[in-house]
Length: 130
Image (cartoon, rainbow, N blue to C red; front, side, top):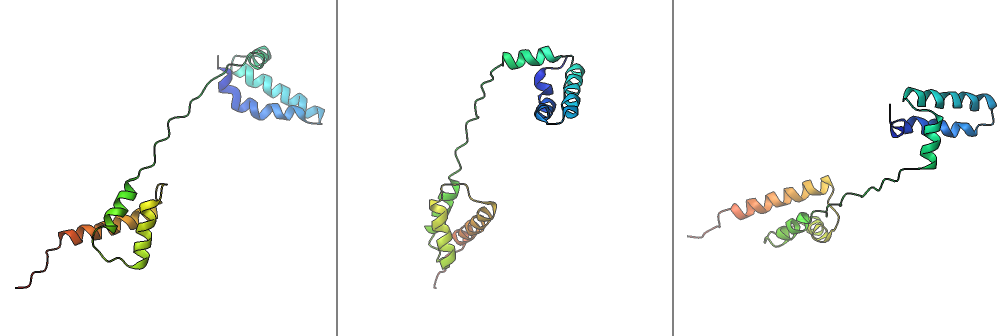
């Protein structure tokens, strides 16, 4: 025997057809509903009982993860690196440093590229005049 909830998707498509102005369509819909219920080992009494005594299911939404703020720290690290950024890069980094939402994939790629430049800058040997 199927649970009524298993049949709900099919029934939810059939029941609105009962409002048809065409008597033949209504009769055919009732027959389709009965077949659907019978295939699940149920009948119209089970459907009426479920409508009259609904089971209330409380669903809790999963806790939404706080968006990562790593992009803000990465952008600040770039801005404080000592590199002279091009104007559009500096503007982008300032935007990322204050942006609350998670960056898009394109923004994250650009920020990662700028972080790579900071890493190369920090690994570079200081120039020494002899």
